[in-house]
Image (cartoon, rainbow, N blue to C red; front, side, top):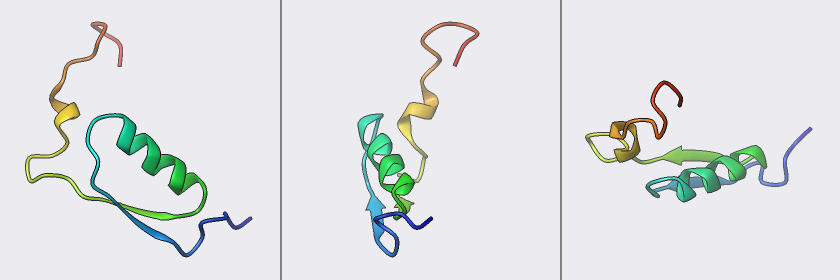
Length: 55
């Protein structure tokens, strides 16, 4: 079933959790989301888990 945003292309330039979550929601609605990251990658990948042994 087509989403209401089929055919829409979105550039995601956000950082941390709120921005990528918004991109995920737009993707779930059918948009093509293109995430742009800094050369070193997303900063949150460098943070350890909040609780050891869990993600």
